[in-house]
Length: 450
Image 1 (tube, rainbow, N blue to C red):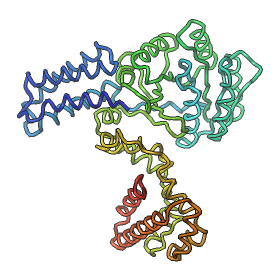
Image 2 (image 1 turned 45 degrees about the vertical axis):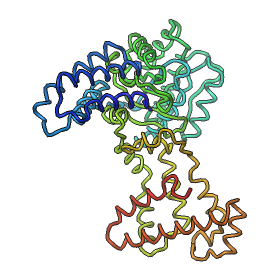
Image 3 (image 1 turned 180 degrees about the vertical axis):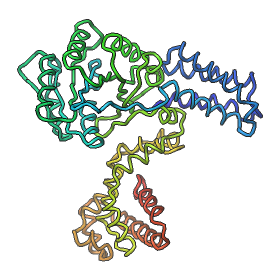
């Protein structure tokens, strides 16, 4: 995410390395590089210039005040603050006060509207405890209704559709009536898009909005299209006056122009970001966290939040007791792997850890990194999984044949597992269970048993 922009900004900050303080000369040199980086990321030149003018003013205004701070670090802090402000400053959530809350989804074809509809349905169901209905109002794209049907089933929500009806305004109105009559907490209306902005599409989405009077209208935009995305967002807003923007495909080759420019250009907040195809790959947009990612500082808060989402206090208490009794087994280890996997794409998780993004940028991180370990454990009998100490040579040979792994790999895994188990047991005696649990998560990370 934003790799090229991150590198160019990093280069601009390095220009200040070794400097004793910020001066007009070295600030001007860095500002020039920052402006080039932003324009290269497809940020409008006017926005880039206004942004860098503010950075320059703050840098020269604080250089004599904060003498204890290194020039490069001071510039990073100023850019972080201004970038966060440019993208909105504070997170803006959905207004969910109405019953039902009607959410209208708009955007061009291919921007990821239908996939986002499924993700938002899961988000509202699981994070906001809402009974959710999704409505299929794209009557033009082949298989659009089928796609939303599959997604609704996948996330466990009901879908309203009228397969034979070709009037999207009518379908949307009927869906809202259905939501009211059946006491749904929220209804998400997925609409049709076009390959480009045209009058017919604008008329249709405006008619749907007028017909259902949504509490929230979200414009979904493909972040990989850069400044074009911002221009499209502006055109839609002028016609339907939506409430917020959703940036999709942030896991792709994103230059950053859309994320940095859309709030300034349109005046509407980015409310969600979306990555990948999995239904849990949706996040509330936090401008400061995004600025930290762009500057290569990671996003440890989001990382912790994802971990907490998978944290089960009852299961953790059971696990704590087992570790204290030195009874941690392969079944427990499999559960830990599953929790880590549920947190999302491994590379995106690693990139949230400060400093790790650059280190792993050119490394292929396989989301099936745990497959080897799982295949070994799954080749064990239930008795062996619960009682690791019974694994003798004959059992190991049978496991080796079952998983297709060399006996040396089996021995190495069991040795490392026993070392981990021993260490966790020792830590549990030291009244330091929180640190122990953190280490358990680390040891379950990718590459440990490769």
